[in-house]
Image (cartoon, rainbow, N blue to C red; front, top):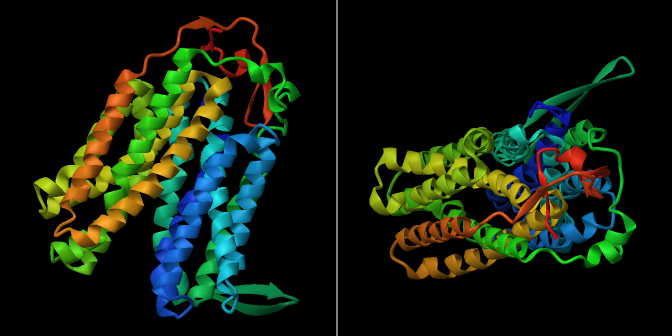
Length: 439
């Protein structure tokens, strides 16, 4: 049992979320204007590739638990990190047909979902219960760090970065330049992180055959109270997806065009969102270890609702700044809390399933809510109703969490082996202070 939150395993988890979501998804958003300006794609084609990434994410979230119950989780994590890395190299070919890019962006989205669902169930149970909030924060801080890294490095790579290689006593100049340079540079970063995390995952092992193949263990009924808990977590996390949509879709446009401020001001406020996203999971995780996951989760949803509704109350620069920072902090910060809270409420044996379903719920609601908001926006005189809709959705998340009651528990004495991550380990070893669900 690990006693320190910051260690090689939690950093491997950070690398996974950074590659799969922070870079795998967000780097393309930063690349889109350059892709269009350079004539790689039309605006419509670039939008289609964004949809391909989202489609892959939905499919990956749906398949993550199924794959995790049939294959060694370390293998899935390594393969997903590698495929995300390769997708950037594959997209660096300028004259490839659109279908080529569509396939690779869908693959990146699919693997991004795998890298959102599987790392936490590998990392968290291997840590002492007193530090799981901080460990979860480290894992999910990769989302924000990747967003900041993408925003900073993509413009630099497009402008051109000189690289030299010493070969046979001579210096061979290389360069990452233009759109190709951005694709290659981000792929190189992902590949380096993949290599660094390769050996940090626990020894490979699959779920016990009985559970994985539909044997007796797979037929055990989940207690009714646990089923209700899982459904409430799914609802809360699904509504949480709606809670950040207005900001992530329209925030810069709201500041620049609706409020009449400069593009530089809009870019600055978006960068503040990225800074908040980078520190959010670490902050919320530390507070959760001190004050409790449920309290911090409710407070997080409430503050995120304030951030969503703040443009309705005031459009002053201080209000925009606070809204940007709070929304940034609690977008990945709440993701970390939901994963850790799912572990606390349903136990290690059901954690991966519950967290995988929660991620799928998030992805489906995000897609549906995004489509509705995108359809409604052209018919509205202001974005204010969309910000208000996000705030109301987050109030619904609070209601769901308040309804959760932990299932009746009993102390673990001798537990059946369960698979957490890749190692099939006695549950009492992974979760010594925890309890097993009553059957």
